[in-house]
Image (cartoon, rainbow, N blue to C red):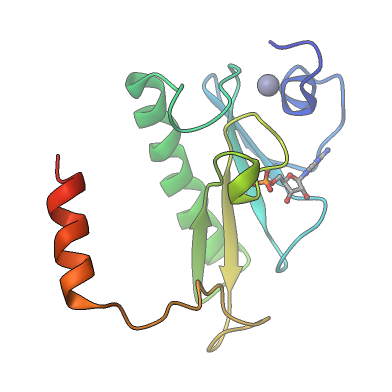
Length: 136
Ligand code: AMP
Ligand code: ZN
């Protein structure tokens, strides 16, 4: 647990939340600023800031819970579909530096506006060169 972390405080029961699911690995609760009704956050109980510092064995367990909670929301709400989002770093819009997955329920075609990256058509030569430069 990290002292000044709001999500650690929620996991420890020191700050209340609207709980959806809990087990020994994760806690899932409603986002207090929901993008859509049922917008839920899934967090590991341990403190990790994001995707890159979470040990793979923990991450696997968390992602399986994301699947479990999403499957539940789909029938319990219900919803037609859902987005799973996970922000890393302030540049990506992360405001709480404790790993969390957003599950955003969606209904119909694009309820509440799409979640879109507003991409522009790529230049094939640039894409090819970039892939060659960064290929693992
Ligand atoms: P992110 O921008 O990915 O870091 O998302 C952080 C999310 O946490 C935001 O959607 C907030 O609305 C949500 N949030 C912040 N504090 C709380 C809280 N105490 N309980 C529930 N959700 C919270
Ligand atoms: Zn934390």
